[in-house]
Length: 167
Length: 449
Figure 1 (cartoon, chains in turn brown, red):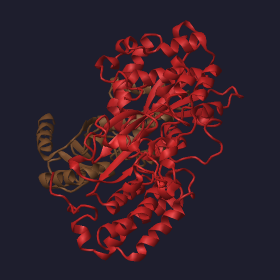
Figure 2 (cartoon, chains in turn yellow, purple):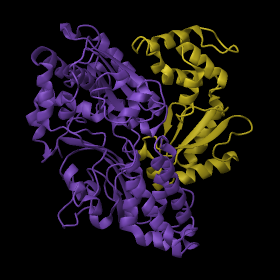
Figure 3 (tube, rainbow over the protein chains, first blue to last red):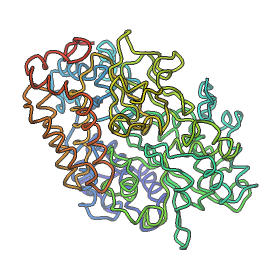
Figure 4 (cartoon, each protein chain N blue to C red):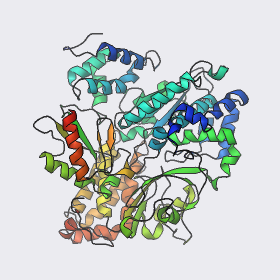
């Protein structure tokens, strides 16, 4: 396994990668692509550069195009650099019914960026997403692995402060 | 208070761990299954129970299991569909988050019944924190000997893994889920062959929803006949309903099928009525894909009989005056909501999520979104309403998976029941950007919450 352009998982993470590959029958290692892309996005700066995807292709012994076609299909993968905290605000019907549009507007105004953009300091990206399965606890957003539910402007103010301190 | 099969102990925090789970009767079905029952006897009990797939289609689970091809020496697979992504649906999340062992137990019992030696739970990638809960539960089950080699000293061995998706609604369709698990784009397959014959890596495969699998321990413990006596008619047992929208008590409720819709919406035990004392305008009873019901058809059928929470009653009247139980994603709209706006929102969702494989869906969802955007934003023409009707008809039934239908049905039902609202948008192009058409006079863009 060769690393391209100095991109390589740490030895501990490499052990995790190998354990994941073993979950699938021999010769079916390609199945590990989604779990490993999630790990790669987490470990290599929050997005998947071509070098990162080539590294994953190497690890799985598949062609780079097989990784690109998967990475471009699934919306959780970022193909461009993003802020340290990506604010993924659900905008689908049930969230809209209880004010998700207002949440997006509030964030856009407060952070002075539009949906899809990143703040100049590289701190936040606003990304509207489709249904995250939290319809009863709306409006909501996901940041990292965590769900933040029943959002209000006050709660957003508090969360943004916490995120800044955390980064 | 109806019978609880899944959520009886949901309020006890210790049930998340294996000790607490066992304390409340967990894993009994594994002992019984492995020591006293043959795999076929379990399938028989599931058939007798009348259990139907809880992901949305409502196909009889026992029958699905009996289709699993056993005539080859290929391995067989059981896949749990935990992709939960139908807008309005958030029920499986509750089971996996609070009672993860219920799903693990169900997977072990079902795998034994199907002769499966390796099983996967395919969970949507956004539920990564739940994946970690499940992996913890699975590790506990291995440590206790419920998973791995020679389970509880029997000859039966099973490995169970959790596999994350990457954010794609279509992967809830079973053949797309299989493609995704194989490490590919989630493009549904042409059927036949059905997964029961050629599924994961070309091997016989069964795909079942989380809630479906979670019912299996009860059926083994208490017997299929006991289960079949709960509920109403061919809608046996209980169903998790995730209620959301403009109600006082959004959340997940386990109901006995047959509960009157009126009681579900207005009783304090369930939704607790419409928020702010407003009037009910409409309900989407089974996830975003099923037809919307206007107020007059929600609590009563067109024939005037009480509408019940069951597969049959919600579908009574066909698509003319009925809808579907679907996934149990129950979305309630108050008098101030705009049907055109919501239909546009749903169409945007389907356009975003179409895998792009079939032209009618790839192009049609885009057309529907654009026309609805135009209507909602005051640029629509009267002909657009008929054009929209025409497009949805050309999508429905013309794709290899049910996604096309799912994108067309909400549009068709909205026009069928709320045509006046569409026309009002055309006739009042300025006013429709300022306020919603409805029983109330709310602003189209309400003030900041």
